[in-house]
Length: 92
Length: 510
Ligand SMILES: [Fe+2]
Ligand SMILES: [Fe+2]
Ligand SMILES: [Zn+2]
Image 1: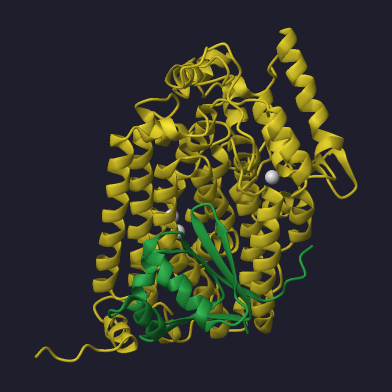
Image 2 (image 1 turned 180 degrees about the vertical axis):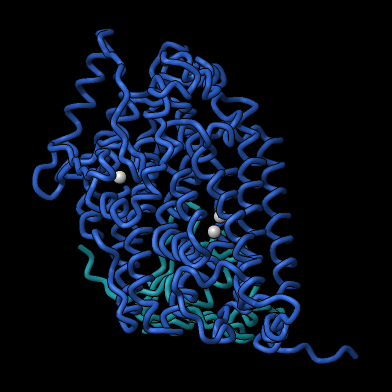
């Protein structure tokens, strides 16, 4: 049995469009675990995970709509809180 | 200068609030006749909010983008004869089961959400359901388009929707979706969006699509991930609707708990087919069913229900049994397909030595002890020419419609699990306490089940012989039986420049 408790995760496609999102998640989430699996990348962290628009924009050098993330999302776990600046997943 | 763009919250609010109205020519209860009889009490529909706050204009923009990407890949896949890059043509059995068993589910989900998109009283919930109705139609269509390329080269992919309504093992997914569709709107959304999509869908799509990538099937990987990108939205809808119902009225809790118990077990039994796909039908499996169950149910579901505990919601009934069964499930299901392989629309095949070694490694407590010996025994029989398919028809569970193949994994894994109950003088049979409970809560519903085996015996399926039933299923002789020696196998050997009498290619598992 697993003893991992309140893991929030986000899984994205393993492609060019997703790369800056993966990098931004690595920068903004201390202790995030990144696993590469065939075709996809899974990032998980205890409690919560955040994607910040600003970080992605810095990495790609252009304006980025947080909802562009929908193009590469595969799955998520956690309660969603999204606005213009961030996409956040968390367990209470 | 264009006016400053409104922020996400504001745009979403404008799209979903104030679009509905209190009707005056007709009573509201006549306009929305279905959303009260289940007993769910809603005091304020405006409290319902979609956390993605997706507006129609962005919805169309992003969906169009997804489609463009998908079709570009499908085109290049076809132009480059992508089918020749598969790990092995036996892998296509998984795709055949997917097209006949899962694609019609997508279409059923489309119908269900279109119904909800009309019949929920709250306009925010209606908008979310309308988007999902379109998504699910897109999933069915893109799966058919993508897999149609394989249909040019391989057997068994010619008539999925016709077969969905008739074939013995396809009545498992059919009865699942029709159970939800024939319920009220709140139960439907609890079943599909929460129990299936939130709690269990990762077990279908994530390892399976990753499995497609692992087996060189770029077409399936692409449609799978394209569909799955909508799924995050669907899962969120599932979680939000549960929280919304629980917050609206305390009387809703026992009703919702009952639905979650029921539809968790229904969806889990349906996924028994997926466990076999994952462990046996994929030439190379990226993760075992047991591993996927551990990550996506035990861990993820555990976090989910701990979070929902604040509303008084508990883990679904019999979840411990499902976890105990994860050591056995795929082996028991695949054994049955091997024994009834002359009546399946895909090719069944015994696991190769490499596959069995992988299974021993993934299932150290059960595979060698219980299952390897039977596969080796059948392999020996096949080599000696004495192997015979089962001639009789199996007893089906009245609820999940799977043959009675599951065992008492917690006490004696070699003892079949049988349950039964009497209703109006007739005896009904079940594979588990989970299915028996479901029946006993709504016997009037499940006594009407269309059980394929009963229907064959009643003379409703083409005739009394196997040949007649298969013809009625539109299974041609080349669609059924062993992979080795099949037309698919021969074609594959020709492409790969191999003697068609040599055994199937066995890739070492990564
Ligand atoms: Fe779907
Ligand atoms: Fe869906
Ligand atoms: Zn059952």
